[in-house]
Length: 288
Ligand code: SAM
Image (cartoon, rainbow, N blue to C red; front, side, top):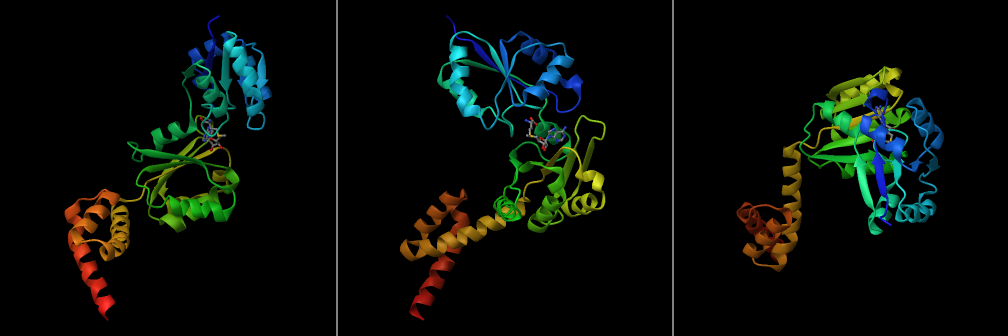
């Protein structure tokens, strides 16, 4: 018997008209829908007159559910995976099930649609040629700030999901760590009645959200500009110096410059003078 198909189906993040005809047709025709919260998805399906059996598959039971679901797919059944809202697997469960389906040679078919991160990016007015999706930051200040420091030099636009009760704190941390001038866009309640999309420097956004508690409600995506190119170059020059300081003690100048340039993705000539200077410095230190 041919194996069944596993559909990965996006559902609305607010506006019900964003539920695509194809998504509805697929959900109306499968043998069962695996849903993060069966009550929540059950209500959505009922609103559209879709009566399909639902099975709960969430972060806490996904591993236990996977073998049974794979057996059913292998027996020819057709299943769909949905999350509470938006695209499954994007800060939502489902990765283990999809990976197991691939391992078992089962056909996996995406039915694309709403995704808060992509909707926010499309309206953010920030560079979108390259972006980094970070999802949720840690709830505790220490690990959150450490992660922000680790991301400080990334030159790509950054996308975060954030809980409304933490948005003021997170914006304040971002302004403190990345600088108040960096541009960011707050995208709140997308596709819903109180939809708000505001682009401003981080310092201004942080002050606005702190002063207006309405901005601390609902669902939020934060899109932040990447590190300015100059900062990245400075950081590269700095680490070039650190690397060269070690290499010139062990290798001829030309070889040290060549190796450091390769490690940092720079032109060899760009580091030759610096390597020579550091080698002279090292010799002077050693003979002092
Ligand atoms: N899988 C979903 C998707 O494709 O967008 C995301 C699920 S994640 C558990 C939920 C988070 O997505 C929310 O806390 C919020 O940060 C963001 N989000 C979901 N719907 C949103 C909306 N309508 N407006 C703004 N952010 C939203």
